[in-house]
Image (cartoon, rainbow, N blue to C red):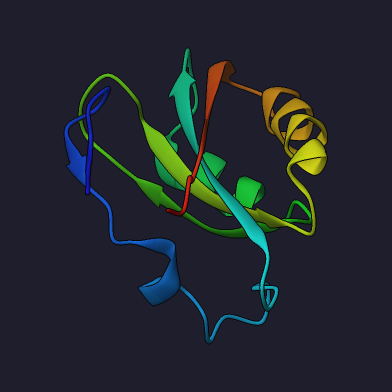
Length: 102
């Protein structure tokens, strides 16, 4: 599936990071699209990976500098994770894209 905002190819959640120590079984998932105003994207991605609920974070090229996969037991947990990401130094914008499974 293609992310229209940043034109990155993302795989369906069922095939992403299921072996990760941060991944929850049968969780709700979302992608956070993160823009930076300073700092290096690799350093910020490393900080974001430490936030509870973040399964992984990758540096990207385009409108957004980092894309993070987040899993929570319920969708109401996503705003808290997005707020924690927003508090990371250098983050200027966070857009949450909740994965919808048919």
